[in-house]
Image (tube, rainbow, N blue to C red):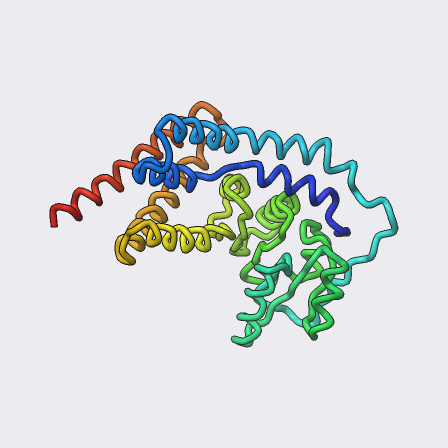
Length: 280
């Protein structure tokens, strides 16, 4: 049965230790605007790259030896998944992502079964008249109780990365007919979901980060059209890089080769765009 998440602060510390590829484009822009020296940018690129390599290993160590020490040993509350009818959608995780999906489905009168592993969270949501069942969505008996065999779509919006991966594995193994739409907290989470065969991914902060980056570019003197074009170029490049680097993220040497090459490709892409704009 799902309990209050153990060691959440420690888990968060491991997750946020990793940098991201978007740092590379920011460093390149900083150099081009003479805000940062090339030597400093190269050093920071190395630091970010190394953080991306070691975070999966730190996460594995945390899940294996650290997190179990924080597990709640108190009395457990029985799960209460017992929907009155079959629904085409199951939502696992009713945090900020799951709630938005649920609200839109409800507005369109599309039935769903919502599950969350936090008893406190469930009690709060139910105060507003929302029906959410309590339980650990990585449990096979609970998924069967939620009538997963009758559903079509599984929305994986669980906040805890380890629990999310356990649930994805359980769904892929026992309910392969379900189409999984997954929330990825960070790049490592996305890599591991892709490795399991989950291809419908939403990186939770990616779009918001791109919007902010576009505003920053305009503040630095680019026009709205130029900033938008840069953001879309980066989005296309990063999505392609995500799929390529996911294939080798377990191999440190190959992973670093892909990241370094992709960084240079992105710089050349922007240099080419700038040259074309000047020639117009």
